Image (cartoon, rainbow, N blue to C red; front, side, top):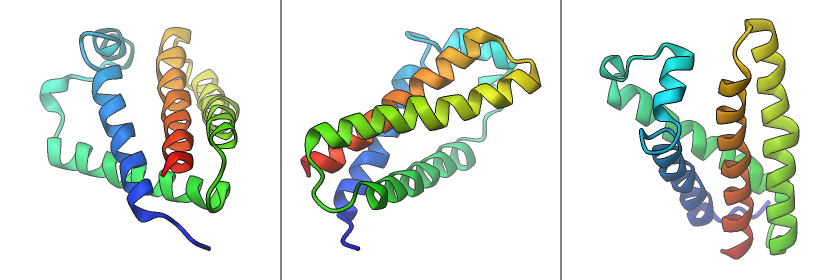
Length: 127
């Protein structure tokens, strides 16, 4: 299968940039920290951010395989919304129900991943 590695890299980078904004204090960072109990001062940057980028790259690569070569923009965006909201967010929902996590935390994380895969689909279709 033909995979555009540059598009996969840029899709992974978009998730990283989106996450930086989404989980920043300007958007949902403070609420996310309250809901998770994570202390940003204790985060090990290389481990967390490096690992997050690698995982974003893997998910973008697999999504590129799923879309196939040269998907149309409508397919890329539609499949991204479906994957983010239909697969990833619902999987988080199941875990959050059993872990008794808040609905607020669910919407923050589910919203991020829905946008993440929507961006993946758009980037993979446009490049």
